[in-house]
Image 1 (spheres, one colour):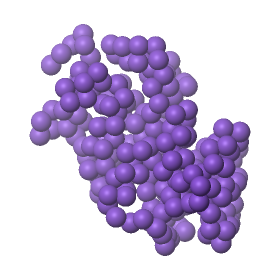
Image 2 (tube, one colour; image 1 turned 180 degrees about the horizontal axis):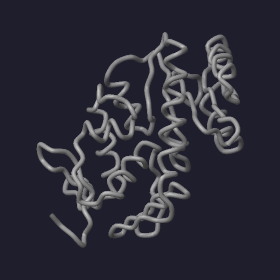
Image 3 (cartoon, one colour; image 1 turned 45 degrees about the horizontal axis):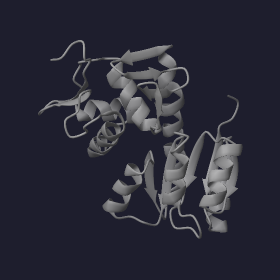
Length: 232
């Protein structure tokens, strides 16, 4: 890939143009969507490598756009919003975002977050080929596709990476800090976000998320992906 394509979804023209300049100066190819409807359309036609998403926009909001995009794509999404409460951040992760930044923002931090999310998503899966199959769950590391009993499961980029980490080491316990550091590629300064993603994964792959068959907790230790052929 020569240059990563970044979709900027922002209705404030000044902010959108500023972000575009910062990203262009770093060698990224960019397009701007002024609202959620245009973001959904460009995600399908232009196929960006990463999306920077505002939340408060006219018409289709950022939250609605993320949920719609997640029906067919797990392209990395960074929310960039004036909403700064912890509840807003947790909700953003719950609906499918991979990262969350608040306005006003530091341009260099935004660039760092963009690079970090791109690095996690597009390099992590290149370490292995083919399929990983555990029980009725299959992980295709070439297409970055998760299927349950042959049906596609729509997961976010971070959910995919957590699944790949755990499924390539079945029955091995990873602490929350270990999962954070391996996936986020940084010290575990906000490891509680791991539990949010684990819960979301369970809701998508488990028959009964409250009594998981695959993604199990090792109390006081962390999480493990359990193979039905080898219960521990």
